[in-house]
Length: 464
Image (cartoon, rainbow, N blue to C red; front, side, top):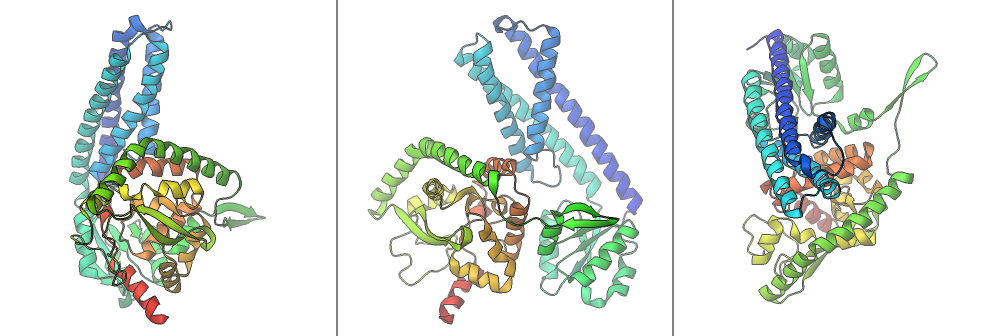
């Protein structure tokens, strides 16, 4: 096991290599754009000299960096490689689209020529970005593989399964030892004092807080699974009351100008999406009719802001008699799913009619996913904060859909939803909308209802 000093030196080495290589990468981008400008200089309508071309390239690279940061493309080790590649591709697509529009105005280049340059720049920038990602990822793994952690777990956690999953997907550290919190604080302090990394699972606050203080005092790197109350504290505003430090906790919900801007965005974007996807929606409508002649749409009872009920609209993807014996869990190879349904479910196109729900005001583009009233009542008994997600409208996509999974536990979902509500901003909505594209083809986001959700409904019905 490496010492804490060695691990800190490894972190510094990685960051130095990462950012120096990033500077080199943007040097290549700079030269790429500069060379294109020199090729186009006879076709530019504005009088731009050498200094102007360099200023243009510098501005281009700075805006590119901002978009890459916004789409989390620099977060090596924190995001999957495919997510990082997506960030580079989308950033290149956005900035080159804007620059192509400007070129239509300020150059004599034809649309065909501009399209060729547009494709070339996206491919070139994406390939350079891909090489940088793979290089940094290799360096990251080289310096991070030695980070061995002690896992302090709680009674609700399956230690062996949690360790297996963590060591498969977690690039921050590897669990090499586990301790149950019930062995007592004194025993845990003795065990972790020489450790470089400590991972705190779902353990009681009166055990967790002293452990965090101990780790901070001993300069031990510490990770923990947050409680819901941590989400509240994280967004608190720091104030002063005479000589006292004061924390003010904001109220839930999206109010005033934010609500108005969000609603206008919902109307504009949903209208545009309906126009753009109308040929696809028409094709799906015809395909469903030709497949079995049944109804095109399927309506589900859901609740949105303030518990208001509404009918959530989807393209029907299952047989018309799919629920003749009551609601049952959808499995991977469920024979109730139609041929057309299997295709549109895998790429989330069965959700497209919900754009009409957004236009009507039942839903928003971004927000917690609408749930059945039975699920909300069931989960609220175990997690009182679960009903707080009804402070905002349900969304077509959301923070939990980007960073969680379809079958995440309710307690994990509510943490994501509350984080979104408490940290809401207009730009967060835009970011979630862009990042939603990357999850459309991820397998874990197209799985059927999890068993616990179905059991919740069955228990509710038995209670009646």
